[in-house]
Length: 341
Image (cartoon, rainbow, N blue to C red; front, top):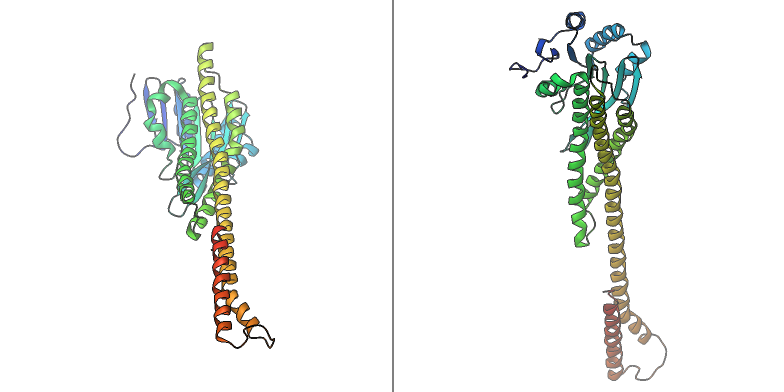
């Protein structure tokens, strides 16, 4: 069985059955009426999170599903908290989608809320060029045809994880590029230090997104929906798929933690190399200062009003000059051996 997918822009909602698409771009009561007319139908609906239209439509849908005001408040919240909750037949997930500005090395986080029942999935998020749930659902229509709303939710969470993975992959390459600069035993330059600081800031922001999602994904994997009318093997397969998504997120979150430690090591190594270079510079300055001070010391002693052998003689001049040269040469050799000059 194939699913007919229209050409042109992806719809903002779709109602379908295992036999194919019934309707698209329906809203509110119209969407609910079509679901009531077709007992085997499923639907997804993408709403903008940041405007009044999305809020109004969500409130109407939430009341129809029997969700209370606290749940609606969580779904509309913009604080970016990650949360999983089961309220009656509905599962609630709030999380964040991330996007990286590679030129400025800045991470942007977009809150996303999802409420899903056995027959409908509603997603609230402000679409970005790299994350458009309606395009995602449309491109995976065949999977959704057989998997229903739980398949839609799984595809949505995989897409969210993809945004995390894309940032981690780029951050690994950027961190490795900085680390390669240290192999020449040279500390990071000022622009590179600033870049390292920005990378650390991005990793800290990404950690605040991925770490709370550990609990969300673990809870979602531990409480998968029970497929209606399917045998135990079907429920086991659904659980395994959720477990795989949870394990994938764990790898991503662990990668973020490892990158933070790796970048911290790069910065610390750069500081150590910079300190070592500073010490070498001070040693060389001290060594040359000692060598330069030899003529001053000898000439000061010779010029004192104190009688000593060969005073005021040509031989005394050559002896003093030879003493300057010999002492300076000895100091130079000693400092050279100790790498002070």
